[in-house]
Amino acid sequence: MAETSNVDYSTKIPNNVGLTDDQRVLKALEQWHPGYIDWWMTMGPEGFQTSDVYLRTAISIDPKGWAKFDYVKMPEYRWGILLAPRQEDRQVNFGTHKGEKAWQEVPGEYRAMLRRLIVVQGDTEPASVEQQRHLGKTAPSLYDMRNLFQVNVEEGRHLWAMVYLLQKYFGKDGREEAEGLLQRRSGDADKPRMLGAFNEATPDWLSFFMFTFFTDRDGKMQLESLAQSGFDPLSRTCRFMLTEEAHHMFVGETGVGRAIEATCQAMKAAGIEDPYDINAVRKLGVIDLPTMQKKANLHFSLSLDLFGSEVSTNAANYYNSGVKGRFQETRIDDDHQLTNAVYPVSKFVNGQIKLIDEPALTAINMRLRDDYVADCAKGVERWNKVIEKAGVNFRLKLPHVAFHRHIGEFQNVKASPDGKVLSEAEWAKQKDAWVPSKADGDFIGSLMQPCWERGKFATWISSPKVGIDNKAGDFEYVKIHQG
Ligand SMILES: [Fe+2]
Ligand SMILES: [Fe+2]
Image (cartoon, rainbow, N blue to C red; front, side, top):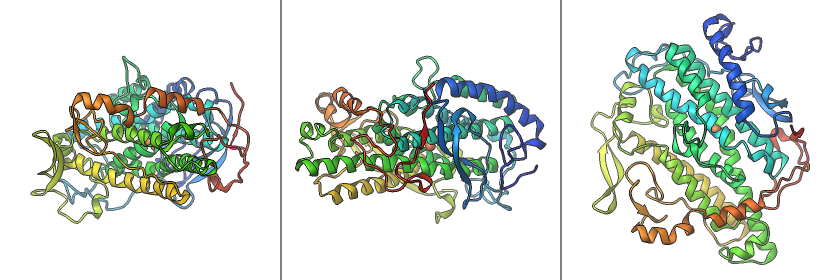
């Protein structure tokens, strides 16, 4: 079966890339499969591997009908290889190869570069599954539990997507990298995952929602820029991943939004006007808004670190070579080579945070990060609408990009959320007001009681406006068989 828009389910690995005609890659993937299942059983959702979960599975790459919903036991999920349709005459749209035909094979000179990009992207996918594996046990509803598992199986599929590229295009090195992706573990001292935010704990459901809002959104931006790649199979792979990624961001945004809603409603019902009366708010069994701000501060700053150094020759090389573009590259009105262009970069100069023009080529990471911040800000405004509508006097906002950073220009700077440069002592004194403290974590932890009755939700989160796949409010999204 050749490349099609419908997915071939006759092979062990569902795909639309003609795997039956590509025995070498099919065999390589079949050999990798048991190790993957082993990883999923040991590192995937803990305690729910025998439950029936109402999941969507990709069955087509037609945007209008690409998924079907049904009950599935997660280890039996059909993880497949799906690429967006090939666009005839697609070109390399930026860099020194601009105007050439898009590459169907890896150009020898960019092999190491492309492999690196694919491995780094691939490494994030299983990492988040590992970070979230314990959350099923404290799910605030069956609806939320199902969403968690949906995100998890799709991150698993994204790992498959990257492994396919490694196996098909990178020979022996690719096979070794594919093995490595199953060996590293989030947070492991000896074999950690490759990027910082993917080694942090996701201790509770508010963290999970913040992670899917902020960190999956970094993933979206990375996929967007890889979707521009001149290496066509990578572009097509990432384009299809983006259709799934939209749901992950939905889970994050609505998850936090519903927590905000529950808090505001409880405050109103109890006649609490002051959002900073934290003890009174917490007594209602909801998460106070200032603590949500702290969680947002933490996850936003960790996610900013994923964009790497603001000024980067690696990023310039990726761009020049045509392997990784800018967000919505083809919609930008410029020469797409950035020969003489400059871009303002926030830097730390003589003790001050300043915007300095840098060559646009080396400022590619900064630009992608700016696009990311703008995208985050829109979501935060939608959260503020929820607060406003409830009549509570509070606004959430994104902290300054210099706040709480570990990578790039500001890694050695202490700054407040509004961007004021601080001494170590000032930072230490106020830190607990800006990032979640141990006490905040303990309080949120105390609310993480499972709520698994059909149609019921934990006190700290409101019910969603509509069900998944338009199901009624009391739909049994997960039939729990604990094993
Ligand atoms: Fe992903
Ligand atoms: Fe994701």
